[in-house]
Image: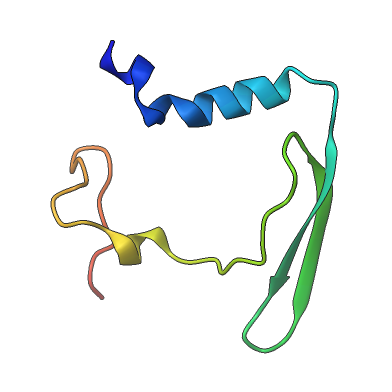
Length: 78
């Protein structure tokens, strides 16, 4: 019951509240590779776009001991 009054509920409220409207936003997802090639994906969303932002590998930002090892395993060292 504690999560009802904490900020952790905010993303749920935002997503559900936005999806109950009949408003859609045209969003573009643009990727640019290190070699300069580009890819664009066009679609609709229930929230306005965000960016620009850099895509990162989430595994580079792991907090030690934060993964549940039975379900999620970090990549093995090659």
